[in-house]
Length: 105
Length: 105
DNA sequence: AAACTAAGAAAGTCTTAGCGG
DNA sequence: CCGCTAAGACTTTCTTAGTTT
Image (cartoon, rainbow over all chains, first blue to last red; front, side, top):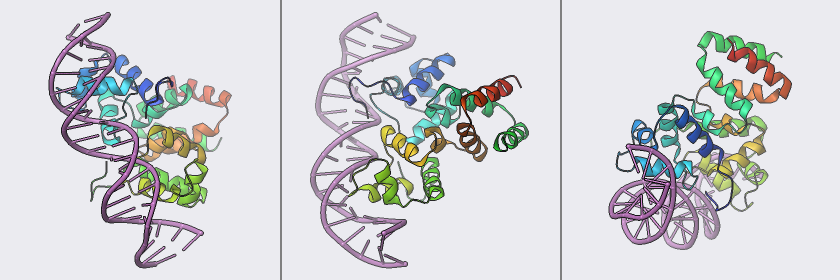
């Protein structure tokens, strides 16, 4: 991961965006996700800067702490990102109804 | 990553599922994704068994080779997985129409 | 307080060289 | 051909200890 002058990864950008939307500091997000308070700030910072990438278990805990589906953190275009968040806010019945509609379009 | 008797990660399961749906061998998928042919089979195998996890750049190339959005490989429930695939098959106009409908539900 | 960084310690992945179905 | 695996080489992340805004 992480070459010098590359654009930030999708994950990095979505993570920062979602954290700021949630009004959390880097440290607070890390703690919420179950990281040791002494390392929380450093680790979240490195993820957002795309210097390091978390393993899948950590990514899952971050998504949970942020109240977004894990898949949202990997959505590589804005429409898909919006769709994932909106869809996850629906209840099961509405999700099923929507799937029927889309899959038979 | 990877403890002995844990269930496979979301990524592992979706990767295998998508590869089999595409009718590819582990080796062929790896080659399609740009891996060195000499290591392709081993690496895809390790990803599917959740022994190792690829970096984000590799995950992105795998998704592309499989014809699914990167986010699909991280969808942690079946409804969301189906939604991501169906949505990504729509053209931009239809995606926008759908977003309007969902976000104002 | 919040965001950020360097560097050694620690933990991970990758390549090579295979086995068995 | 296909799926799978061990182990040393190699590469990455993590913790500590800070600086900067």
